[in-house]
Amino acid sequence: MKKTRYKRFLWASVLFAIASLAVLAPLVAVHDPMETEPANQFSSPGSEHLLGTDQFGRDVFSRTVWGARHSLTSAFLSAGIAIGIGLVIGGVAGSVGGRTDWVLMRGVDVLFAFPSLLLAMALVAMLGVGTWQVAMAVGVSLAPTYSRVVRTAVLSVKSQLFIEAARALGAAPWWIIWRHLLPNAAGQISSFATVIYAWSLLNIAALDFLGLTGSPSLPTWGRMLNEGRSFLRIAPWISLGPGIMLTLSVLAVAGLSDGWLRGTIIGVKTKNAAERVAALFVEEEKKASASSR
Amino acid sequence: MAQYILRRLLGVLLSLWAAVTLAFLALRVVPGDPVEAALSQSIASQDVLERRRAALGLDLPLPVQYGRYLLGLVRGDLGVSWLGGQPVGLLIGQQIGATFSLACTGMAVALVLGVALGVAGAAGRGGWISEFSRMAVSFLLALPPMFSGILLIWVFAVLLGWFPATGQGDMRHLILPAMVIGLSVAGGIARAVDAGVGDALAQPFVRTARAKGLMPFTALWRHALRVGFLPALDVIALQFGFLLGGTVITESLFARQGLGRVMLSAVLNKDLPVVLGVVVLAAAVYGLLNLAADVVHAWLDPRIRFGI
Image (cartoon, rainbow over all chains, first blue to last red; front, side, top):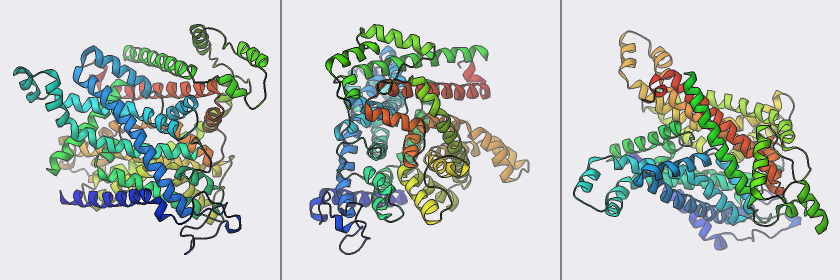
């Protein structure tokens, strides 16, 4: 469908723009993001300070740009962790089946009992406060969801006739997994991977907001939102810039895949409800790819 | 039906036990000495630390500690805070009311908004109404609660001055925080209602209802929504669990008392018994709500009850 392709192109360019800002931060940001200028606090947006300055006279634009670096990379890290764990657990559970599947899925069920943000916070309590620890905690807290989707996607491919045919022809199990299962489940698996990245962005910003990431002077979107909160009356620009950037990046990442809307219904715990909802995601994903072909 | 509920209740208790065990073990293998970390503000001698550890039962072997914790849990005793020494149950009990009223008001906002957007998305049948409502839903899903909260405070408290920006007390203090929770939960509900009602609208019984001469609105309201609401039920039950996470942000943003604040300060101070208590409570709430969702499903659909 043409319309989806245009939309994807639009969001891809937004994401590209944000990512280039992050990569080119040292060039784009004329002011040092940490440099304080007490004489210049709360100056409104203008030619000297594009997005104004904060309570210490630090340049908000520079801090937002450097914040993009932090947010995009730590979300990448934690999405990587979640996707890695999820691929292994969900892939093994789905393709091996039987008792292995039962044990792995009960483990996933247990982790599902904890809301992901609370789980991430508890993991931070365990690992300690800091950028790496937060990325790790968010990654682990999102892994159960991804495992479930991978498993359901693999299962839905596994039940199809061509797999049975390959088995009947005497193909080795690893060949079937590599050549038949994975390529056919790849669409749903990768579509949900972008959803995981979007959720990582949101959860990392939430933990930043709560002040759980390392040094307080480090420019992060979440922390800037928190700092600006106290000065809304005199300097609303402190939190508006990072807030808009954060929302825009989540929208852009989500817009890359249509899986976003479908994926948000996942998040279920008990086996009946969870299977119902995970199946719904994979089902809708199939419908969408069929209609776009 | 009673047998079904009993069987599922047993399942919930089992998974709760597994969750408690996992959380307990994970929080006991913390790197570094947690007591030392928790007491590090005061300069305590080795001797004092030893005594403190013995008083908290941390010098006992791990299986004994675990057994004690489980026994306490059965009696409703969640242990004591490492920081202040108050019972964790009391700490949670004092704050749970504020969080509960926030969560319920927020959920009410989310339900109204979510059902409205979801029905509009499905009933618009791909026209501009559905296009618009689906765009609004993706925007809601991407909107971080800390940003929506700041926008609401800026517009309604600072610029217009209609509501207080912080604190708690009467209904006026509750409206903005509840809006934040509602906005962050409504997207998921709208999505589920959209999918459910969309499927129901395509079914023959809705066409029959229309053919019988029912108005489109009545067919939608009386027939499609009843069936289409089922998938939303799972999502609502689960979002309540998510709400407990959302209240952490909302409470800190609006400087409100509540469980979220308790959890945040416990995490920052490494007060692990309190962290454990809140997490266990969240798991219990989650388990019970899922049970409720399953029971309602089974009640409406006998095939589930008999395991067909």
